[in-house]
Structure formats: structure tokens, C-alpha cells
Image 1: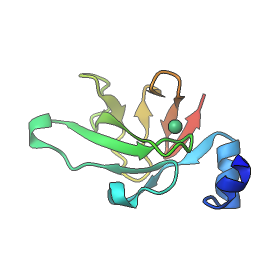
Image 2: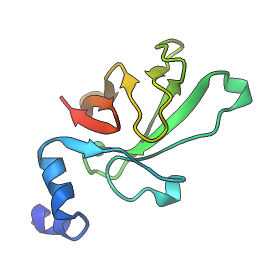
Image 3: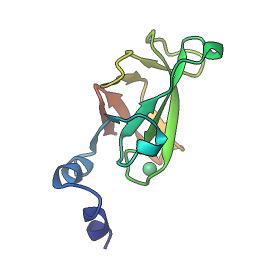
Image 4: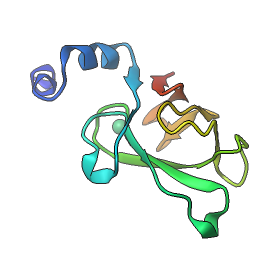
Length: 116
Ligand SMILES: [Zn+2]
């Protein structure tokens, strides 16, 4: 039943990616454009936040939740922010991302969410 439901929303390739636990991070303009797991957008820099920006994405698991992490484009993993390589199309962040405990846990590397 679940499989048939997913068929309505995902292409064969996307289903394969989900099965392999790899979900491509696809950059979109904003929340209203987020449709598929891994769709993400990066907020403009906030002058009050210094080097920190927010990277928001639809949970790679496919549950539809919008998740977000603070990132720093100097690559430093400080102030509760993830290190980010500054690439806005194929981001790499460190360390791994854990959503709500163990709901989803994995890495965002070169624009691919890989669960672990
Ligand atoms: Zn999820």
C-alpha cells in the first residue's frame, strides 16, 4: 500500500535513490517550492547572525517534515552551527545530521543525503 502511494509522487529513479538511502539535495527557491525529499533552500545571510545562515530541507526519509540546520560558510563547526563548504548547489556539511534523535541520521556530502 505504501509502495503504491509513493508511486504517485516519485519517479523510478527517485524510488531507487530512496531504496539506496541516497537522496539528492535539490536546491529550490523557498519553502513553497519544496516538494520532494532532499529539496532544500538556504536563507540569505542575516546581518545579526554574522557568518551563520540557515539551510532548510525536506527530510530525506520522505516523511515530508521541513528540517533545518544552522551553517557557517567558513567551514567551522562552532556556535551550534554545522560547517559548510559554501557550495549553494551541492552543499557539504559537517558533522553528520541527526533529525529528532534517530528519526533520520546521515551525511550531506556534495549535494547528496546519505543515511547511516
Ligand atoms: Zn523524516
